[in-house]
Length: 503
Image 1 (cartoon, one colour):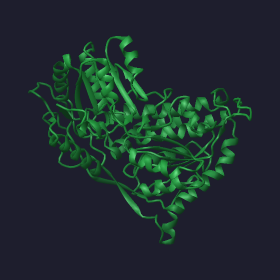
Image 2: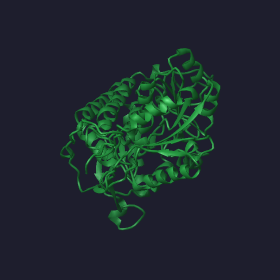
Image 3: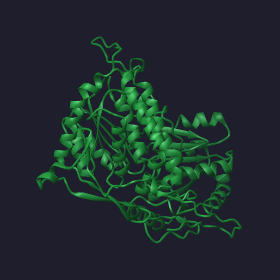
């Protein structure tokens, strides 16, 4: 497959292909489940019946090539994994925090040592550009394990002690037990780190289910756990589709549920655990507003807009998918944005020059396509730069919608793709009102040279994360989460510990 570079005008400069070698990744033809420290077949496969045991294929979304087969875990497999985690919990939770920290530090160092391999693997299985997996995902994955390793022996000082009968905070925060964790396909290894690192640091054990379209990095992480000498049963990986995730969430041996994914599935999980004593955190969808005021540095803002919506092909829950531009600078910002989009390179995700890779799956591409067509049908004006897309794989050109109102579907529904809706405002109050006019509440961005305006507007935005003069910046020390239909609970930072402690 070749990369293509859409251009607004002929250029004397051309990029030679700079592909990363996929030879650094050694893929097996098929993978089993990782339970109690070993890769194993499904129980149903050995008996020749049941709901699990079948093999599913994971494909490269840029080429539709089958990468490997993996096991569909059934109810009995989930039960085995939970029982292994429960058995390991008594030993793992009894370790001094400093001893648990050694394992997390070791995992972090192995991730750094294997970062090139893991970056190529993630790009192959997910479709995102190698530049993003190499420069963003993998450094953040290691950073999360390093950060929570540092917390493991300091939990008594985190301010999350158990309450005494008199209501006073005690010095001994305790782990919950077995954490059932379900992660999405857009940041497979990073979402794994967000969940596993704080769970292990606080003394919990884990059963994790990766997304059905991106299971490979979780299975490679299982090998890292063995390489680090992690005790058996502390981390278990069960692969499969939504039925596997539902079995994990419903299992009575799970004490804590952590889910990142769609709002619809999040609501189903909330209903499923209602009436139980399971602790739950949900990080769901978003429709983030990126607000550009008339005094914003236009070139800097345009780079932030591009990063906000086209990073990872817009398949980001906190993407800045609604651009709110002050009327007086609308034309200037839009012209600059179109010029910038004409320089984006769409193509082979393994090419280091690529800006936009492939959409993760045929199903997701169909959803993006349908919503974009709805936007046109409702009267919004659609624009994309000249862009020749590869013939194989799942691709969608970077797209803008103008003449958008708050009633348009493209301004209300989460598209989860490289599609930006542009709206205007006149006053800061109008910007806040439009930004908050959404069922979601995950992220927002503000672009202005005035610090006082940043503080005034940010305090009125109903969003869990507000960036100022930047977008999509993450740090393991900073909490992340949303309001309303974007879920509840926080991951990252000191706040991310609380979700795994009995407080």
